[in-house]
Length: 426
Image 1 (spheres, helix red, strand yellow):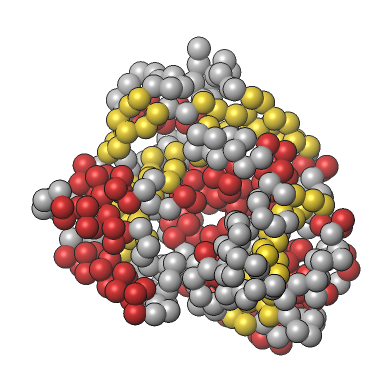
Image 2 (image 1 turned 90 degrees about the vertical axis):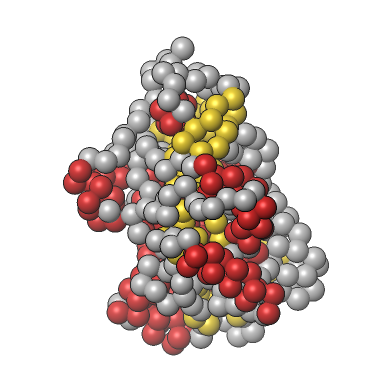
């Protein structure tokens, strides 16, 4: 029996000729990742192990992004802990506030060329699965696993089964990667891919930009997926040729392909032309409906940004749709570019002026409101349309608040209309 893309990557990183679903393996890692929430506990474990140093100063990535700029003393202490560790161990990929490459971890890591096709990475953050968009194996772990990996440069895995997601056709107007992944989660539920690899394929893949693919892979975890991975094609190669020209020129990456006889536990077919503008209503990402069917829902706030939808394409789309428009009275609209590079692009292109003219709040790159951290916490009874990835009870603030997930076009339209809306209305 052949292997899937994920199984091939894991086999090579474990030094094995083949692996099968359910096998327990130890695999070498190309990168390990932590943030300001998950790294401090890992550092405590690291020090408790008596470790003298990290396995490779260039392969550890530390990103302060969740509670930054620091919102209180506790968050400042967490970031200080990580900052001091990075300095002590001379971590080359530590991204301090204000640096050119800084921002939200899952935006800057691909954009800074730190992950390429065929790589294997773990991160102490569940949305590490984002990098599967590049044809890499990427998955989230806990802080203890991060600590051990920082010492050894490897970790163990149970090889996952795979679900084959066949994408066909082209998306309709304003339909984005966010709508596609919400549509899939609505089909299979929040545990529909539990500890399985979501492997996207089909002629519809070529209709998706890299930013769209990153959004889709980012939310593989929202249906329980171990990882979400895309094939390597011309769009992938064009992207990595700009993000890491040295590795690209050397050919220092591997484009894996699933075998024709690879085994899948399930095959799902999605006609992209049939995917509607989609929202996920409270309080699960799987509670999906066509946006046009929920236009009577009044809102108090809109958030556009996050590791899911804070990339250049997202912010450009928001600016194009908001140009000449005004945010509805009584609505707070918060724009959060996902990185310093995206922020500067928005500044140079005049997008920030469009947002300011429309009545938006513009933030420095941060995870902020997505996890109920800062920059947009909800009070009891408030409702937010957000381009973030989770809408659990209390996710963005009070347990009696509500979050509706959407793509950028729906979020912009909702901000202008003061209720859930679609872009054709504005």
